[in-house]
Image (cartoon, rainbow, N blue to C red; front, side, top):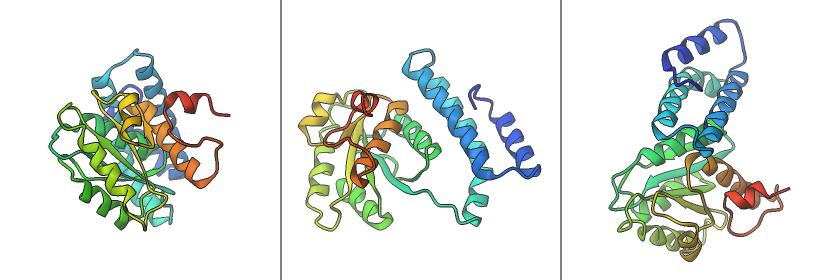
Length: 220
């Protein structure tokens, strides 16, 4: 997974299953590997193409594990609805975030691109989501993130639903301005922020209010 070798990742995963290893243990190794990839990305030792290759390697291996995990009754304990906001058709960053979150134990509901505020809300309601993750690559479409946040705020039946945002033009200042609950500049830090936001709602962390990577790194 670290090397982005999909074929070998799938082969080793199948061999580990054939030897009787617990699928959860195998998943933990893959998650650790993607964590290393994320750290390298954060340090600018690798870039988006390398991240994508590693994510695809993990996705191939995960395809072998998921049926077994479901059959054993294992279900992710956190749910994230992801999508690129209305008017925007870019999805590379969103896809990376989805793969990283999946490896970190989230169930991912990916709505794809050009997603309306109502579609985000409907999916969050249907799947009992913990968070909505909004992505945008264009300055002309990132304003639609505000619509998502305002729509969620009006939903009286979802008091614990939170919205995090990200994308190339989206700054921390803008995220705060529109009332987001969290912001991350890249896929690696998005995992930490999303996890911290969910834990804050569940009361398992001391973090409160707006959460960004700096807040997470400084948490005790």
